[in-house]
Image (cartoon, rainbow, N blue to C red; front, side, top):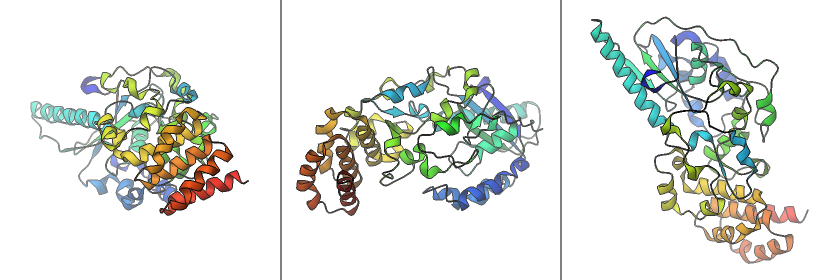
Length: 370
C-alpha cells in the first residue's frame, strides 16, 4: 500500500460507544495498575470528539510487523533473554508517526488539486488518549480477540496501529465479526494468568506491564513465571491461530537487530547507565531506564539455573540502585545453595539500609528456612 501502510479502514467518532462502559469496568477493578494516565484521561478516551471536537472521520491504519520465525522458541534459552518482537528495532512510534504525517500531507494536497477546501487533520500513535484497538475494530481492520489485542484475518495479531482524525466527512467501513470462536489459546498460554476472563486483561499480572510499566520490585510470586522475558511478552499474540495467514513483515526499518534476538544475559547485566542508553538509543527499551531493565535481567538470570552468572550478579549487590540490589539478592537466592546463601546473607544483609532490599534478604532467608 502507498505511504507504507499495510491496511487502512475508516470509522466514525461515534462508533465506539460500547468501549466507554468496558473501560469504566476495567478501571473499577484496578486492572490498570500503576498506569494512572488510563484513569486520568478516561473521558477523552471514551469519546474521540472530546479529544478533538471537530473530528468527523477517523482513518485507522496498520503496519504489519510479523516476525519471520515463531518467536516463542527463544523462551528455551537459559543464558539469553527474550525481548518482545515489537521492541527489537527502532521505536515504531517514530516510524508510523512520520508516515501518518506524510499521508496527511498527501490528503491535503489531493484536496487542493480537486479544488475543495483542505481538511484539518491530526495524527496519533499510542501516545495520546485514543482507544486505537476499539476504533480499529469498528473500522473493520480486525476484531479485539480474547487477549484484548486486535486480530486481523490477514495479519493475525501483528499490526502496529495509527490513526488520522479529520474534518472530512467520509463513509465509514463496516466492522468485522469476532472469529475467535471457542479458541482460548491466548488465555491458556499466559504464564502469569493475566486474563481473569475472555476479553479481560489484568495488567498487574501481565509480563509486558511488569517488565515495562511497573516501576518497583515485581511480586515475588510472579517472578518465576517470567522466565527469560526481559522486555515485554508475546505469548498470547504468538499462539493465535490466525497468525497462520500472516506474512513476515518486509519493512526493513522493522527488521530485528541481531543483538536483540536472544541477547546474552551476562553481557546485559554488566551494562552501566551510559552503556544502556547507548545500546538502546532510538528504540523503545530505553524509556524504562537502566534500573528497571537490569531488574528484569536479574530476574531472568535468577530463572536461568545457570550458576556461571553468580560472579556477575554478586557485583550488583553493591549497586547504588536499591531496586537492582534487591533483584540481585533474589537472583542469588535462586542460584546458590542454602548454605552458600546464608553465609552471604550474614555478611551483607545486616548492613543493608534500604527497606526494600532488606525485605528481599528476609524473604529469601525465610524461603530457605522453609
